[in-house]
Image: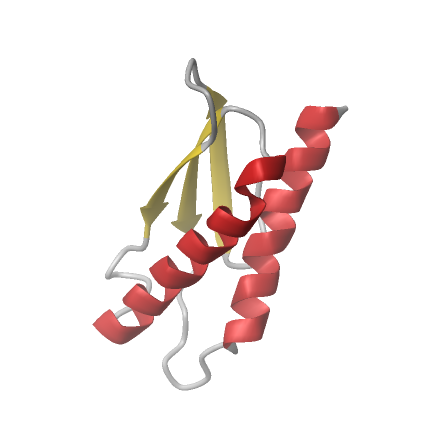
Length: 94
């Protein structure tokens, strides 16, 4: 699944719940502070959505560069991650 800045890859697993992996490349987010922020946002969104997600292995990947001149707001980034997780839950339910 693709969003404006992130891709969410998923595959069913044999476990009891969803698991998350994060790929935030230095090439796309140069500053460590920004990379850590993106990881924190991804983990927190996953924690809150985990109960409604199917048993999938998920990889949230930053797909487009984040400009340091005009970085997106935390709210925009979090909304995009939440939207991807919500779409995954809806797709699995149908």
